[in-house]
Every structure is written in structure tokens, then in C-alpha cells.
Image (cartoon, rainbow, N blue to C red; front, side, top):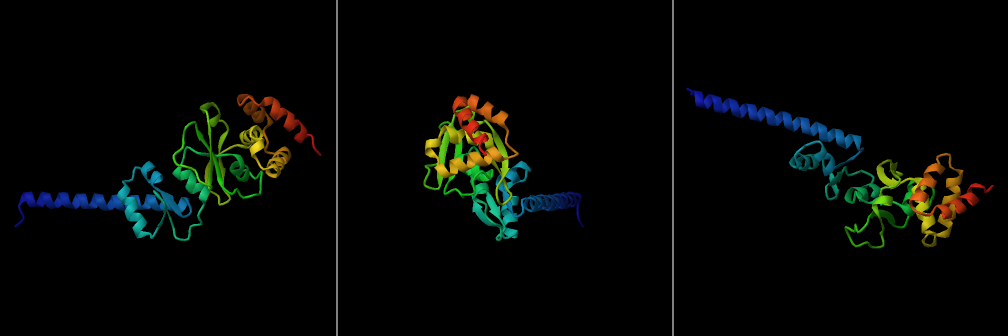
Length: 223
């Protein structure tokens, strides 16, 4: 015959098992929702933001046959890799800039040979190789004109907007391929999305107002 202590112990164990089961189902549902919303990938950061213990992610990755793309980044086997997104996840302080930003904004159709990114002054989390070009900037201009933009695969990453990017390439025109440089200016001049007010503001902040004004006056008045 079961005594009262055994009864309470069994009842307590049953309650714990029920809570664990409900937690397991709920967290799996949350993880599945993230995976579906991302159309095939999930990250450790997203799981942490939901307050889900990391071991749930480990179990979810195993059960669903997800592939490790990078540290803390997992995807379905048929997920079409977006290198812009993966790089952004690994190095969230970097902002896509220069030719990479031109490409993201459709101001060049030439696929960049390497990522060009800008980070805060003295920020260098790795030694760059030929696949990445790192620029650094002071806080006053590092935070200037940052926007969310979609990659060609539909994922959102951080980039400088069109106007900040134009200021960057005008200030560093001697380092930019002449064809890319000229085409970007002309495409911007014809764009219905241009914001000349922001362009002037950024140029003033970056102390290149005279140079930007002279160049854009010519470009904006071209036939």
C-alpha cells in the first residue's frame, strides 16, 4: 500500500514531467516559428532573445536535421546561403559600405569581389584577407545614415543609405573604380528615391560639402 510520502513524491514527479513536456512543446513551437519566419534558418541570438535555453536549440537542430552554417547559425539543408546575412550575423558592428552598399542599393550591378564594411574606430575583430575590406570611422560619422536594406535573397542587413554611401565614395574617389564611381553617381541622380537634403547634411557633417556640391551639381544637370 502506498504511503503518503510516496504519493506526494509520485505526484510531484508527475507534475514536473508535465511541466517539462509542456515546456518542450512550447519551445519547439517557438523555434519552428522562427525557422519558418526566416524561411529556413535560425540563430542562437534569436533563441536567446526568446529566453529559450540553449539545449532546446541543440535538440531542435538534431531533430530537424539542420546544418551548421557558422557558429550559432543553423539552416535547413536546402537553404540558399546568403553571405551578406551570415557575415552580418558574425560581425554585427560592421555596416556594409562603399561598393557593397552601392550593390545593395542597386547603384551598381557589379557583384563586389569582396565585402566592404565600416566599423567603429579601432574595431578589427579579425585580420582581413582578400574577401573583406575594412574601413573604420569615428562615432560621429560611423552611425550616420545607417539603414536596414534587403539583400538580393530577401534578407535584411545593415548598410549605409544611398546618400552616406555617395559621400563615402566621393571622399575616397581616388580609391574607387572609375566606372563604378561614375555609374553610381548617374544612377543616383536619376533615382526617385534620392534625398538631396540628407546628402547635403551628411556632406556637412563629414566636412566635404564643397566637393559633394560641385560634383552633384554637374551630375544632376546632365541630360
